[in-house]
Image (tube, rainbow, N blue to C red; front, side, top):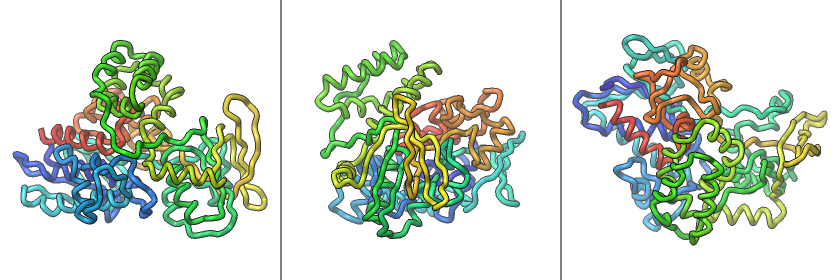
Length: 456
């Protein structure tokens, strides 16, 4: 059993694990040190948005914080508004309120079970293992623990290849959209905005800025030019438990075969969404059976299609996006951004290559916003702690850029590929080991399992 545990990260994964541990009855009291990086931990990037336009893409009934209390968020929301239904898609900032309230309650009540916690509002900058445990450095201070858990979420986004330093320095090429959205003011100018990427983050950016910039025109560029699929207006249960389809896939771990079986199953279903949702409990196990070559093939050819089907838009968001398209305020393009350069007049020239051939076109924009999804490339990150861990050989980057090499239970592998007995991860850093490892239903299961492991 680890009595002294350091938890590094200030988002939902860290908050869920902290709460899970503090509410446990253990043979010996726990002493937690939480490097939250903020005076108000728990929200992280995902639930730190202040905008009511940014909705959860999972219905309220499925967003509980604990495996044992899957309806916890719905109860919290209904306490503030009895009209809320379990099928509703609620604002992400409300879920941030829920996370903070739960972790605040867990911290407040920790003493009743003998536990204590030190919440440090600074980011951990170094981690050094020793024969007695780990030493975590922050600023000029350090803290000691028997074990550490990395729950740092997505890494800071990096500019895409081909973007000039001058374009970034101008402030008109936005690498991280969330601080930009938080600071963006109303503007009536006819701005030309390019959004690079077309996932859920791109949708959030367009919805928010189109409301603040009513005369702006938005162009969204992605390899395939497709929006995320929408949820059904009414909640629907999976067609079955997915066992038969999962067993068929497990018999032949080949991406081409799997896609064929998925298409076959969706053609025989009333709605394809029920098939995809039925596969959710099996996805991690199937991913672990895939050889490295098949994982790479999935990432090259099928990832975009799976993620637009798996991570869907709420119906009201889908409706608003299509209204913007119908009004001519949003245009979607297929292709890749080749370069971005700063013009003498301060605008940005973007060279775009068309999907499927080598022809290019140069277009001019006032602002370019990068929304290409989570950054989990631990080998090429500027994150201070992660760089130190990688350089010192204390962890091994996943070879496909999906976080860190780890065992499915969260044990991280060191530079020699061996599991470290007292260094763990939770959340997006485990994408290489689990693939599905970023949504709350997966996070809460990981938190429960990891808490069991730590206090075993």
